[in-house]
Image 1 (spheres, rainbow, N blue to C red):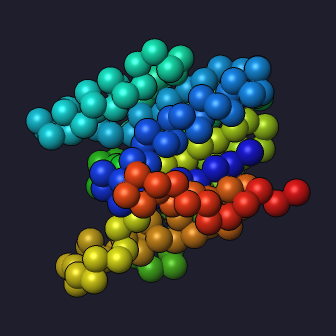
Image 2 (image 1 turned 180 degrees about the horizontal axis):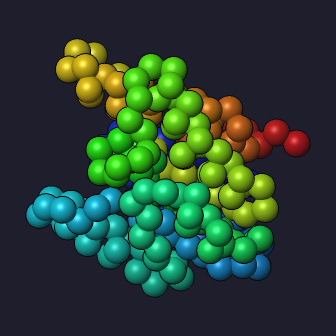
Length: 187
């Protein structure tokens, strides 16, 4: 099962995603509960956020794995029946675009195809026999005009969100701490 959870900064999407993953894991009664952390601890703000997220998930039974890029390599560590929370897609994309030698470097359609190969396909493969809960950000409705590079990042994040949302069994948006189901499981 693949669950996509989106929302703005500070919306409560991370806590909702954690609780959702725990519920799936407890209901399934199999596999291991993993937290795939994608934020690189590079400055005081990121270290504070990481600490806050660790505190939020403390005592929930997660085994944390850091995955800053190359999610395909990480996918091999999981077994059928595991439940994996990926926190979060926007960090993973930024890392692939700006922190690695490979990853997503091209522009336009070629860059979207790289995003497909480097991020989307590995996540969808993991979701074939595992429960995947994906956190992503809604950063598209502020109405601002960004520089070319930020616009490219937003284009690719929108592309990834749309592709994962199309394939997800459920899509949720968390607004002001309230989870709103956007797409129901299709059986």
